[in-house]
Length: 369
Image (cartoon, rainbow, N blue to C red; front, side, top):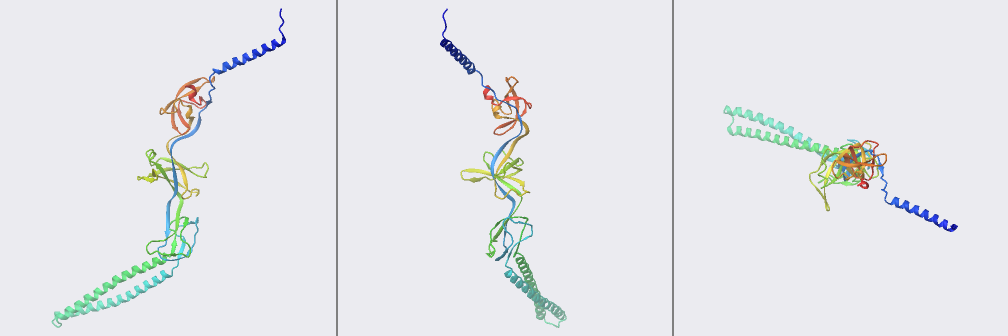
């Protein structure tokens, strides 16, 4: 019998190990890839139209001067909260006071003339009556009677002219009083001073237009002005729910309802958009005028529904409200099951029927096609 040398035994061992490794690699090469299993989770899913927007106060006013003069005092600063009727500024009242004195004197003079004219008209009426009686008895000539009647008419006409002038003087007096009152600039509404335009000591000329002193806005309720594209304006309508976020507010969002869409388009360079409005309460004052916002108009929503990623659908949801998902048993075997779908967003879709909580499905249906 031939002896096997030790070095030959070592070589045979290496060949056996190598053969085992090749066998294992060959077995793994044809095995199917592992299927990632997931369970549906409860989510609030919504299909939305997105637009950029700007926040504006629902009530915003420019407070101006109705009389000319020097802005003697400015009693508020930007950011101040004011109440309706609060004194905001004062214009030097010297000119308005002089006009008031002039109007009062003119009215007093006319009232004196009216009293004299009334007495003259009464005397002319008595004289005309007495002359007419004498003329009826043949004592006074007809020319005298006619002259007395004419003087009566003239006196009464002059009295009417003076009374008309008195009404004009009374109107001028009321105007002078209003002008004097208008030297005190009062807040027409409760709100916040958003901008100071005129400065204390500045001379204001209100001859042709009312110079603006400041801007006042009620920030307790805001209006979101969204820019809806031509493609999206067909998909939304007044009454739809909307929510929006603003830069820097983190995950906080505000909710409202689309109240109106303006019928006329607004051109903006190479694009055309339509303005849509959403009103929202701003009780805590977090929202400010002219803030930029991202608004989402809700087309469809499925709150608290079981949800899957779109990748779990065999057809990606392209077949409408129904699709197929691969349900996995304990051994990892897949069975295609039809589900009824609800709202969807860019990542997830709501499953309304066909799945139960705890069921496992393939995360990527494309692996099983």
